[in-house]
Length: 503
Ligand code: ACM
Ligand code: ZN
Image (cartoon, rainbow, N blue to C red; front, side):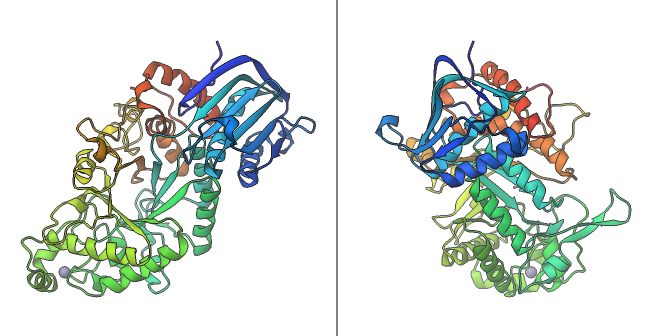
């Protein structure tokens, strides 16, 4: 029985007689998409070594799609023809070509043994269900190296992940250099590390490193969306600039986990120049049109007791203190709009809006469940689904046993595979506002990149399939068979993976 065992499952596969065979990896002829071919060659060489490419054959042809490839109209679509005489990949866009090359990379990873490549013949036609297929990595609770992030991007691109959501700030560390506020990194990037008694941990990314990551991701057709969490999860800011808190401190970069009472003081006008400086920095370093402002888990108790916050509260004529967050959200969204950027916020930005309704173009990232996203589309806002209870939280344990790494809950591969960003209650118009979904890896207990790999793989494969493939053809038996082959591919990329039960 022939089977490509590709993840995410392509839209259409038509198997043909015979196999494409080659000694070594075939050469690539490029009539278009040179950049994509170059990245693909690098990825193959990283795995199989520089000698893998055959000198003699001219087996793979990349071309701009023409009519002979039929109706290729979607931005990421591709058509891959594997015939005994050669492989042809057609796409209309560079992104489509790159996605097709990643499918081919999967076939090479499973079809290349002892210097010989053999792939069943067939024709694959493919395009995604959603354009937003993301992974969020929390680089605040623990800091991950540029090298690790690049390795991760190469691994994610294999399953057509399109978004790298980079969680750059939180209570436990600030990772973004902001020129006008040097203490954010000088003080805010380091914290005590109890795990290693008495030591200090942390770090930040230089501008050069950030540009390097953004460009590395872009070459892999992955968009990097930065997140700076405001106005809560702000201990690292407060440690650096204690005047921006309600009590004046003292504060420290948190070495505990949880949700903390101290947040930025809503009555202090000094928070706005800080936001402007942060957004100028983000606009300069990140080409993405999206910026994530966080907005989750803000505690309001300090605001209630703070004279400056109370003055603000009275001036604004509010009914409750939580509405001051909405006032801030509106200001943040306007600042980003001034810089040509679209705001994304966690689903709390939908609440307590009062006089300050959520601006129309703000995108809601639904994490507490799918209700936030469902509410967002019901009021005409776009949403990205990342529900913690539907397998999207990769800090959760793989299965329910104390032997597994993780915290808070259980998120099986099965759950992520069955995640559907469109809820049954959504109307067609509402469903059209769902941009897609993503998995989030919070890193409170993930102190090394290797552990991050174990939490991400292979769960991201199920989520990638939920976001790319036709939901009507979901079949866990079929998926688990493909996953078994795919995990061997991931082994070749030297990723540490979970290999236990999938549900
Ligand atoms: C979140 O998990 N606090 C967005
Ligand atoms: Zn205050």
